[in-house]
Length: 359
Ligand SMILES: NC(=O)c1ccc[n+]([C@@H]2O[C@H](COP(=O)([O-])OP(=O)(O)OC[C@H]3O[C@@H](n4cnc5c(N)ncnc54)[C@H](O)[C@@H]3O)[C@@H](O)[C@H]2O)c1
Image 1: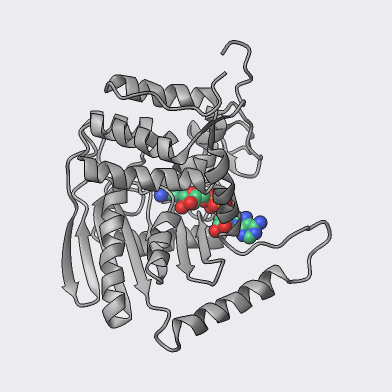
Image 2: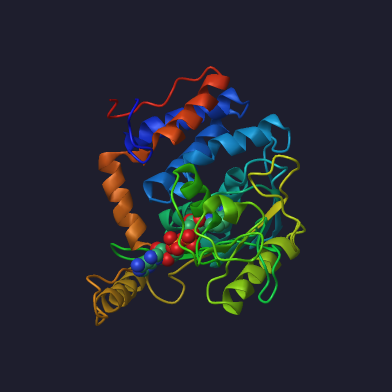
């Protein structure tokens, strides 16, 4: 491997990636059925090109298990509060498990009553929100998927981290192209800064400030006491507050800067989530709804293009195209990422990652 550039990509098949992640999780005490849910959600992110929230999260998640701040064996508990409202106490299990059963309950309510809502407390990071939206889409449901997260953004006008870079996600079924909007309220998700640091890359200088409040293109300086910048000034900061109101204040979980981040293994995260499923065929048939979504899609991607623009995309479409590509090529990883993942496998006697193009 000597002489290979640090950004050289090696490819892993999604199925091999899932098996690998599952085996590392099981090796760390996660029950097999739970490990398969977590692995599927993480690899779904890698397939969609959201590498910041895929299997590279394994080392930090495993560190949390080893430190006893994430309960590998816990099973989230679901309580139906009204016919359309459920509550999940995640019991400090993986956020993936809590959101998985939370969205399943919301979908069941929506099938019967048109809408279902689940509030989740005592949870952990659930990675890329789009997998929860996709779960609703697989049941022909529209959805809202909110979560809060650890401090990363100052409130507008502030200079210290308080609000989370908490993604707002929503979706609706279409004909060929579902609508999936999944966006952090910062200019960029903080995971993109961790990824740049892992890969030895610079970041655009409008993403973050360093600890002295200066713009920086150095990911390490941004992460070392620096802050993320909200998108759209007070509007991005307002969306971060919104995620905290719906996910944190309402659920009874931590909020207002008190969620612990996934890279901090010192204490439980106590993340809150808020999930809603909505039946799209309440006022018309599902076919009519899909036709109307297709009309919207055609209008959006067929809009007049600004100078220098080749193609207009629908929200979620770039990731959908990326997924089609990666299902063929595999998931790209750099050597440092492979080494970090294999080190985790080694700790629990699991097999190393299967690379498609070993050199
Ligand atoms: N769980 C957490 O605490 C947490 C925190 C932050 C981010 N995240 C995840 O990080 C991921 C990345 O977030 P992000 O804000 O950096 O995403 P992003 O900026 O890459 O994309 C945001 C949205 O914009 C759409 N989009 C992007 N470029 C487009 C274009 N040219 N035309 C049309 N639509 C376009 C995407 O489809 C997506 O829906 C998300 O999956 C999010 O859930 C999770």
